[in-house]
Length: 313
Image 1: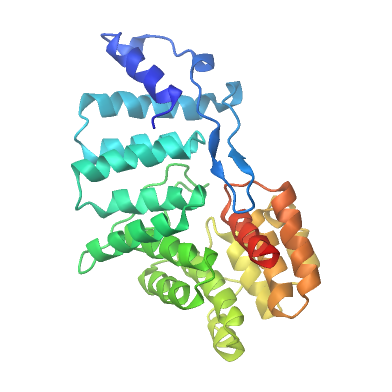
Image 2: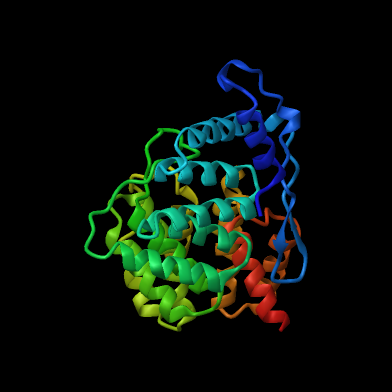
């Protein structure tokens, strides 16, 4: 179902001959805040939009205007869905990507993006179905860089269509505790990676999977490829976690590293380190802390939530 924001903006466009000349009433743009249910039975609530979100709202409205100019253009549909998701309305974004699939069923990008947002909304089986379809569609195709919707500090995209498909597919299997399939797809992601940012992202999850599979020698061999002087633009958390696993950073150095140390990804990596090093009680406490205090849309949060759910059941 499309959100009130989407319906409002359709009316806005249709009632204006030249929407670029009209002022944007930020306060009139609202999203549906209920986005689903967590693995622990709690409502997933996105915060309602506020004045501080004006840049994201304007980007979304610009994407909507562009989409309205040619609703069959696949790039326009994708950006409309991505911008909707950045507003926190993942369910409406899923609806937009579904529209894209109906219009362009052979375009892997729509399955990739809808699969991503199925993960956000805890619909892992649907995510796997979409991402497996995306993986099938990209076989024997040339990889392409995916432009960033929220650019990094250097405005340099680090991920590609292929790496994003394999990364999210591996993650969906990981969240279900299917280590074998998660391993295979994160390895695909690593093989497709063309820069250190994506390499450390894939290796971080591969290391944790290998440890969960009781393969410490293989996990250690993976760390041989990690060094402090890798060229990292945005995945500092994964890079520093790998250095921590390697013994080149202490937990205090890692967790005390400002906003990086407080991220759900880093907190989950440390908590999981306690788990596969047989300190289950400490791991469980830290998983619970992430679930109690973190951002529910973050992958580290979802991973912690899946751990708490399995431990509870």
